[in-house]
Length: 276
Image (tube, rainbow, N blue to C red):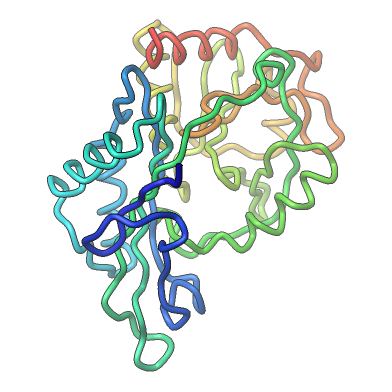
């Protein structure tokens, strides 16, 4: 059975989910999106937070969201019923629209895509992952835009080296975030994550909340690459991958090269919170 998606006031099958080649999201990479998943009886996880971020991204880039938050909530509920997956990935996409001159935004297309959620191999959470580092400087770090040029290129290189993610590092050695996730380190029983020039991750927000409730000290501040490589533990977070331990950065091993107790605790807290 073909997935059903929402496109500009109608429900369409996957083959009919099309926009114009003149839309500047195609030619210029100008658009925004947000991504979330469902848990527990196929209920959207932290939907309000995701919608707040979507509208913030729109404000950052000067894009008009064609629907209200209430309308989007209703459409997502309808789409979940229509597709009826056990658990679902939901992607909300707003394009720049067809442009009269190739650069000026036009009437945006509004899209909600629904696909079956899947779990990543359990070994990743037990043994940890390798990540690479790469240079990158976001122009609009607070907006979740469709411009993923660096991510697409870097992740292809990462796959060839059996790395799961790529960590962005600025010229002065400041660590910001990964291509699709937020980064955390553990030092002296304290959880630390970058604060400035990073996207407001929803899973990051949940992890911070859960950590504080369990008595773990959390600080958001600047992290440099040497500090990260020398950390007691490292992990990254995202809506799709959840909480992933990092045991290797480029050719350097994090401590003993195995998943540490703090990361294990965070994984357990998150899984209990989302799955019960």
